[in-house]
Every structure is written in C-alpha cells, then in structure tokens.
Length: 161
Image (tube, rainbow, N blue to C red; front, top):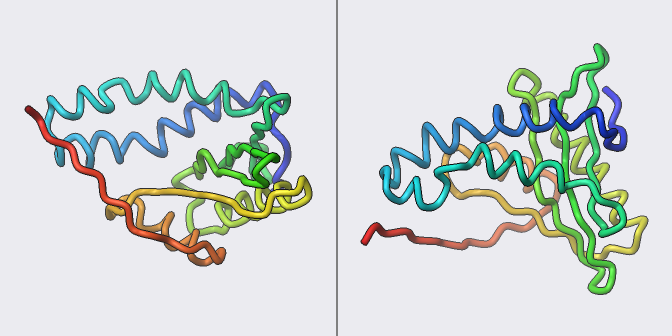
C-alpha cells in the first residue's frame, strides 16, 4: 500500500468510497434512530451533501489536503482529508474513509499517521479529530485512541416539533 497525495482523477472514486463508507450510518442507523422527519431535516440529502463536500477537501491554497491510500493493485483503499490553521497551529481531520474490505488492515492508521506527520512538518501542534459516540463509529473511536488521541464526551439532541 502506498499513501500518496491526492490526484484530480481520484475524485470520482473518493466520492464513491465516501458514500459506501457513510451510507450505512445514515440509512441503517441514523434514519431509524431519529425517524423520517428529523432524518429528512438533518441529513435527508446526505449523499448529495458529500457530492458537494468531497471536491472541496483538497485545496492547498486554503490549507486543505487529501492523502490517498492506494492498494498494490492500484485501487483506492481509503483517504483522509485534513486542513490546517497555521495561525493557531491547529489541524483538523475533516474526513477519514476506508474501503470496507480493507478495514482492520491498518489503512486508517497509515492515513492518520500521514496526515499527522504532514501537519507536524507544517507547524501544527494540536490536531482535532471527531467521530460519533454510537456503535457504528466504535471502530473509529478505537483507532483514534490507539493513535494517542484523547476523547471527550459531547452529547447532541434532536427533537421533532
């Protein structure tokens, strides 16, 4: 596996991978949890939202970068999008997605380590990375903790009126 910088021709596969990765959360977990009205209001167009977001993740002129994990066969194993605020010496992992067949093979670890290393080289002192507290996101929490990240509880509530 090679972790390399984003290339423009990666974009369609990154979008497909994003939808493949997060679709089960939105459709199988979040929708049944909150019901149709709240789901439609909060994330009813989640796939289209990613369609708008993913092309904006890599913009070095504004401190946004994407690193791509490419498998030995040339397929994309995963990617990480991150951005830097060098004034604050702060970095944020905006998104991490790994192909389902390659999870638990240290792809996420390699991607995070690449992003952390790049951030450190650029002067970042603190990195922020977030995920959900639900069962779907348990593997992400375990990954971030294994990388030495410190979690803290945040609770959000939604209610249909």
